[in-house]
Amino acid sequence: RPLSRDIEVPGRLQAVRTAEVRARVDGILERRLYAEGTDVRAGRELFAIDPLPLQAKLAAAEATLARAEAAAANAKQDLARYESLVGKRAISQQELDATVARARAADADVAAARAQVATARLNLSYATVTAPIDGRAGRAAVTEGALVSAGAGTLLTRIEQLDPMYVNFSESNEDLLAIRQTLERRGGDGSVTVRLFLPDGTEYGQTGRLDFLDLSIDE
Image 1 (cartoon, rainbow, N blue to C red):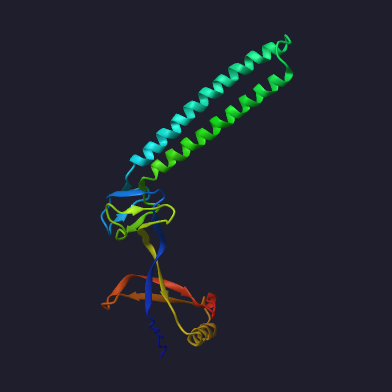
Image 2 (cartoon, helix red, strand yellow):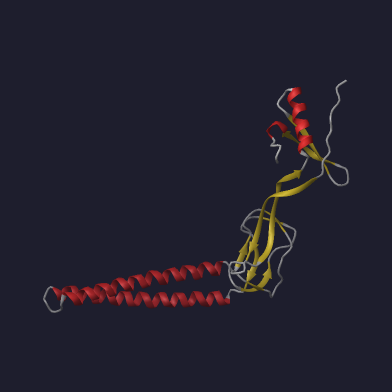
């Protein structure tokens, strides 16, 4: 009579996606905002880094921008006056060209100051560390009061996506080849049923299919 052939191999569960949550700014970790081992959604706040130094840098950048804008406005006024005077031959073309260059340099200073403000504002947002993906947040790698560094990429925690999950198992090339030859002789689509058993011997509620004819013997 036909007999089923059961092959038992040990396997390990692996998350489909794993995200390492790291510090993106330097500072002192103030609070952990999640419960370790709980499921979190992408965007959920996980850690709070002391924002005061970052707020001070943002204020300094905004002051630099205000000074640059004032200088640019003054340079534009000078340019407008000089353009009216050059037609009356009250100033030389060289003086007008120098005024144009100063106005362009002032505009460049404004653009650079705005970039500094944007960078400072972005760094301030990094003081609140959020989850990049949905998943289960693990144990915190640092505690409150620890100094975290963007340069060193201080690891704060890991998030693993557990639905769905990979099940990794291995079999020898010889056995894989034998299974493939058997399936080829039998015909059909070459797929077999896969059942999972937990460490206590209970069977997992869902079954799967594995296509042995598409497997690489070298893998």
